[in-house]
Amino acid sequence: MNTLLLHALIEKEGDRYTALCLELNVATFGDTVEEANVNLREAVELYLEDVMEAGDEIDFLPRPAPQEEWLKFFHAESQRMREQLRRRVSPKDISIEEVLYA
Image (cartoon, rainbow, N blue to C red):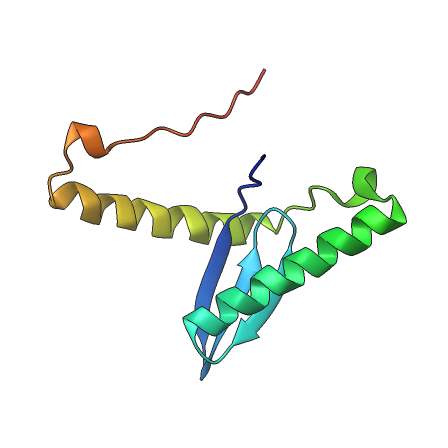
């Protein structure tokens, strides 16, 4: 079974959390991080279902979020990586996910 890897950017905005799927530019919110994540999964599923049923894959897959949102994501990822490295990650705990750009 193929797994589709999508990335979410979740931010606190006021009393709520916004969640954005970076590859599809689909967004939603929730009162907690967990709720925002669940709502985003549902919104992404509905979006993909609608696109596939309409036969619009060429026009709407992928549909990336704006560059500034990706930059926020990469900044957060670099902070997370720094924290992991401070805890002295063992080489056996390293995995590499490859993307071929050819």
